[in-house]
Structures are given as C-alpha cells and as structure tokens.
Amino acid sequence: MSELETWFAVQQWLAREARLLDGRQFDQWLELLHRDVRYRIPDRSYRTQTEPRDFATWSVDAEIAPEHGLAFVDDDLGGLQRRVARLQSAMAWAETPASMTRRLVGDVIVDSDDGATLSVVSALFVVKARRDERVLLTAERRDRLAIATNGYQLRERLVVLDAVELPTENLSLIL
Amino acid sequence: MASITISMELAMTYRNLVAPDGGWVAPEIFSDQALYDLERQRIFGRSWLWLGHECQLPQPGSFLRTLMGDESVIVTRNRDGAVSAFLNACRHRGFEVCQEDRGVAHRFQCRYHGWTYGADGALIGVPGEETLYFRELDKRAWGLIPVARVETYKGLIFGNFDLDAPSLIDDLGDMAWYLDILLDRRAGGVVVLGPQRWRIAANWKVVAENHIGDEYHIGYAHGSMFPPDLGAARPAPLPFAREIRPAPGHGFGVDIYPDQATPRDWLSNGPLAMAPAHVTDYLLEIHEETAQRLGDQRARMAPIHGTVFPTLGMVPFFNTFRAIHPRGPREVEIWSYCVVDRDAPEPVKRWLADYSARAFGPAGGFEQDDAGNWTAVTRSSLGEQARRHRLNFQMGLGHETRSDRYPGEVGLTASEINQRGFYLRWAREMFGVAA
Image (cartoon, rainbow over the protein chains, first blue to last red):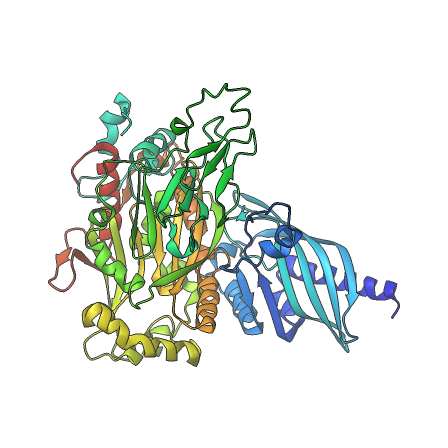
C-alpha cells in the first residue's frame, strides 16, 4: 500500500473503533485486539524543572513515567475482557444508565515499524454526558497496530491523558 | 488557636444535625456552605491530616506538595533530616511558591516577584532588598508559615495547624495498634506508589464514612465485581468479619481468621486468592516474620476498609490509602496511593500496584461505581424538601460489644457502628458536644 492508502486505512480503522466504543459494541471492539495486547493509561504528574531547562525532564514522557507512578490502567487481553464483562453486567452502576459519549480521533500520524506493525499516534477528544456530569477528556494515543490478513489488530496502546487531577468522577470509559 | 465564632443560628441548630447516639444525621451536613466554612476551622484547622509517606522524601531537600483541607502545603525534609510543612504561600502576595508535585529543591522561589525561601521555610532572598527595601526588611519575620505540628507514625506523615492539638499517637489511640497490621508487618515497613488524583462532586464526609464502615453496600453497589457463586467457592475455614471502633472518629472493618486457619487458608479466602505464584509465595514467605512482629492475634487480621479521622481513607484489602481532600462543600479531590512492603521484590510490587488499580482508583472496577453513590447523596442533600428529613444510621445501634482480644468497640459486619462514631466525633469537633 502507498503511504496515503495506509494512512487512510488506519484513519478508517480508528474511526470505526471509536464508533464501536461510542455504540457500546464492546464484544466487536474486543475482536480488534491482538491476543498479546497491552493497554495502558498512566498517571501523570507535575515535574520539577531544572535550570538551565533540561528538555529530558521537561518532556511529556517524564510526566507519565514518575519513578513511583501508579497507572490508572495497565491491562492485557484478559484484563480488558474482564473490564468489558463488568460493563456488560447488570450491576456496573457507573454505566447504568450508560454514559452518552462521542470520541473524535484526529491528527493521525502513521510510522511503519517493521512491515508487520505500524506505529500510530493520534489525538483523542472524548465527551461524556451522564446525569449531572459533563466531562471532556483529551489525550494522545500511542498505538501499535499489528497488520493482520483482515485488517489491523491493536497490539499496544498508551493513552496519555492531558490532566493530572482528572476532571471526572471515574474512568469507566475505554479510551 | 485562632478564635472561632459560630453563628447563633448554627449554635441553636447543631443538635438537629447529628443524633445524640449517632443514629441519624441531617442531610444538610453534606452540602451546607456555612457548615463547610466552620469545618475549615474546626475540622481541617485542628485535626491530624495525612500529608504523605516518608519514602516520598528520601533525602535532605526532598519536598512534596499536597493539601491540608483545601489549602496547598509543602512538606520538606531539611538538611538535618527533619520533616516540616509550610503553607504553600509566599509572604509577599500569597502566590504558591511550589507548583511541582515532588522532587528535590533547596530553595523555593516565588515566580511572581522572586522572593526565595529555604527548605526550612526561612526567607533567604528578596529582589531589591538593598535598593528597594533599604535593608530594612526583617527577613526572619517573613518566612513561610509553618504547619504548627508535623508528626509521623510508622512512616505516615501527618500535619496539624493547631499547636495545642493532642499528639498524633494520642489521637490515633488504639487505631495505631491496628494500623501496625498494615504498616509494620515487615521490618522495612511500607512505601507508597502514586498518587492517582481525580475529582468527584461529593461531600468529603460521604466519602470518609463509606471508607470507615460501609460493608453494607459492598454486595449490592459492587455486585458487578462478584461472581454469583462466590460464597460457594470459598473453602473452609472461613474468616469472620467485624467492624471495629478503636478510638473516637477512627474505625475499620476486618476479616479475622480462626485459630485453625493456616496462612494458606488465609490466602485462599482473601482478595489475593487469584494472585500468581510469585505473589502468593512472597506472602507465605513473610508470614512468619509478620506473625513474629505483630503476634498471632494481629497476624490473623486482614483489614478490609477504614478511615483515620477525618480524611485518611483506606482499603487495605486492595492495598490503597487515600487522602480525601475537600474542595468546597460539594467536591472532593481524591489522592489515592498503593501501599506495598518496602522490601517486597519489584515484580510483587508491580503486580500489587496493577491489582490495586484494577479495583480502586478512578478506573477500578469497585471504585467506578462508588463515585455515583457519593455524588447522589450529596445532590440529594440539596433538595429543599429532601433535606428536611433525617438519614438513618441505626444499623446495629445498641449492639456494640467489647472484647478482650480486640481493643475498642466491636460491631457485626455489617453495622453502622463506625459511621456513628465518625459523625459523633465530627459533632464534637464542630460544636464541642460530648460524643
């Protein structure tokens, strides 16, 4: 595929994935995952700067990798399956009634890894409405997509939230 | 202590806020601004508030930024190793002199006009000291405002704005004996990972009372986390659970393993029944050390949940401690940490951290469903009609017992013994009524 065709295919894949999640079609979403998937949402912190400014310290990567961090989510396939099973139970009150959500995925950049995997960076914009809550979350997604015969499989996702103190009562959504 | 006044109206009505026996409370304590303003003085102005853990301040110059009540403070380790805390407010205009979460700094410089303070809070630099202040500024009088008291218990750092407060250890009372189960089971003590931080539109007391004693909600509110056949799956001998109120305002719930239970039984009935071998091996390995340090009686106790008054919430079953910081009467900012043995192997720490985050924290399967309950209680208390009617806290009232083996008062699981203790302590701190 040409660079443009690959970019278009990835963009479509991300849009369809977002639509599955907004539509609460979690079983179909699970089918997009590679069996060795790793899905992480790290916590983030305000970092000390040094003088003169050290850009290694100032980077986003430093903010999401504090030595004593406690990730919000660090799941493998089993963890994600259990997360979905919980959401589908009749007693997951955080999503009963369900949140109304809209995910916009943009600024998609595709880098080829090794022929078998694509590295994809994108921007995620999620709006959630439920009862009194109106939540806006934005994040950078750093994905690795395995190239399969019938499309792509999510091999790895790192969700870098643009927040330290999350402006939401929970993270019941899959980002 | 600063003089405190309360309005005549409040003084007249406080008896209508909490029952003399704790059996009911008035919903308005969950949303009323005037009561919150009074809490800022009488609860957050003179209680021991959890600031962090000594592992977060590993060397001279280490600092962390946190909250006491809704006010920003810095906690520092000085050159001599002592831990101090200061209001995070420059004495010139009140700007926060520290904006980062933690790190190492030997000075804090205000970025508004450049006043500079040492790790001991002393004002050490003022731009224009000679030319603009004519060397007349008495820098010794304008250091950062220290938090009056800073004391630690087994690595946990607490601060108190009230110079005359009872010592931390006196305030904890017998709660300290039970906290040792979590903090002192190994010679190296514990370290904390985190925090995860998030905001919930709930009153701080609703969150604290859930942690202190609400076993009642677990089977229903957290129904999504339990397979239907859970009871059948648990092998004998089963632990029995109790709610314990060791000292006014403090409390916790605990699984207690009967004498015939082995450490392996203990594991297969606890929350770590499904842990991988390297984690269960570690826990079995340390059991002897734990039994030696704590004695057989406490080694058989697995605390489930608890609160140290007013705002240190715990869910030890899932290795989490959290500060429930108020952000006004109707919002909290939770700072949630994972607590692990300092000397546990790194893979065990990592596994426990992930396990903890899968259950608690904003993405945790348990905690996701808690927030909606707390916001609903808070929202309901605003109703002009709803707020006129008291809320029931009578479960187990009059059925508290005492036991030679367990210091404090003991209730069944479930019982609202600890919630009643919490609100009676609250009323005593707020209005001076005997609890």
